[in-house]
Image (cartoon, rainbow, N blue to C red; front, side, top):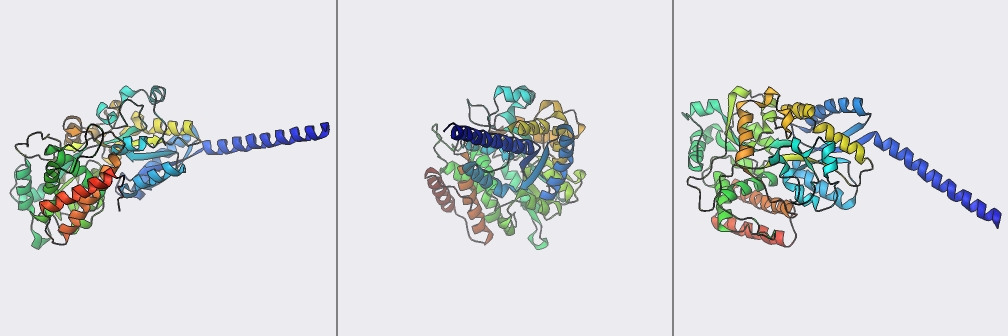
Length: 441
């Protein structure tokens, strides 16, 4: 019996030792390699991989930690993150749209950035207050931290403005439409502006901005969707009728699925204006348009604003970075976040992407002191509004964004888009959201 007990103990020890040894070996291997899902910030995924891998070579040399990066387009990123959050199988580190911060925080899939972890990044005070406002639900430690600062603005082609006799950028929405009309020459395949009508994210952002200009209340105090309202419909109508009524947008834009594609129309002179985030600067340059050929002005608002309307010219836009709770390499993952949010990397990466640093100690770089980036910076600081940091926010984007996409599809085939159609689309989106739906398809 004693022999049997000893044998059993030995077997148990061997099993435990084997387990510990294999665990150590796995941990040791994993500690040297991180998987990072990066959002598409540049002109193409290829450009993103080149930019990031150049920086990761420095990170690896300093820490011994390798980084495998996968660049994911914005149209697929949310669904991939949600899928990994549910399955528990995903990367170690991920980028996310800052408007999704609260929704993804609610999944519990991410490491909270407690005060201790924020100190590892140099302290919360390093980060810009505006950018930190979109990192998760109020009263909880953020589950992501800012990485790239963004806001919306209107890019315009200076030569096309001169040729059309337009001496200065429009100051209100009515003037904006007039300028777009002056630039539109369908017989020459030239349009007043271009937009990404099939992008649910872009459509949701415009619905948010223009709806707030009209005084719409998107959610009640309990976070329940209330966006199916006449005020919200007025905001959406102003956006869609650029194509359906004013005809200053090419109907083919109804099929454009990303802002990057719309940049091509702007950079080649097919459209005189583009409402986009400052991250489009890199794509405009890559398309061969020099900085001296374009300017930027804030998104106009109605004048006067409707009662209750706000001069919202952007949402607090940006890209955040988060660490998965299931990562076996949390310490290494935090090291990567620390590296990417360092003053040195914030200066390098944001200059290459045309975005804005999210930490105050990276602004010494004169590249951020251009007229365009000062305009975007002012918009972000002074006339941007934070989307509600509530768990349902991502479903607002998917339901409303898809509804506006379908309205553009209607306009793109030369069918009328009546105010009743918009009200019905918003009502259907609100019902889907309240019932828990919200597919982007």
